[in-house]
Length: 196
Image 1: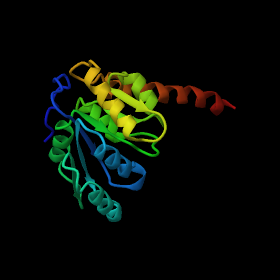
Image 2: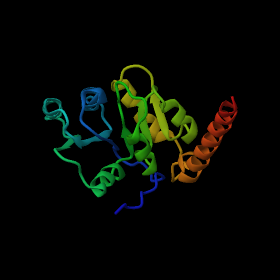
Image 3: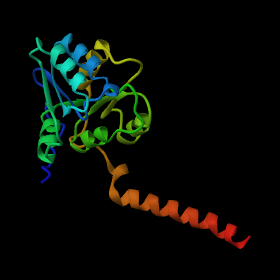
Image 4: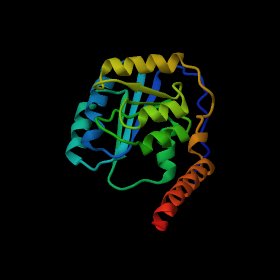
């Protein structure tokens, strides 16, 4: 059973709590995330996900072994919705340092739980930032590194945002209306062709 997401308007006191959640795969760039987080102060990082690549998971565990502010939580099978939500809700923001991506379900899920997101400026993510707003989506250029993480933490501390992510653009009613318009446009195009 889904738990109502907490609002994002809480004050940031102490370390900024960041989380990555999703599949543990090479293109997710988690080695760079763990390496950068190990060198940055003022944060706690939790990386949770299904270990699709066991060698990568072992490498990440070794990299974070001496770093108490990084917690790695890997599992071998899908987890409950409740656990997934709890990990996202425990964070102040979600970090998605993908090497390549077109769309991100994890990003939309984080926003649906009222959590701002750090992600690369690639694929459809700039469009998502336009629809949700730059106070909810922080996109970086180039390779993920320590500087990106420091800049994001500073952004988290200074950016004012509402309690709830504005996801009206992605509501079922709007999607249904847009789909209806698209189908109607196809019908209008196909009608003249049928008369030929």
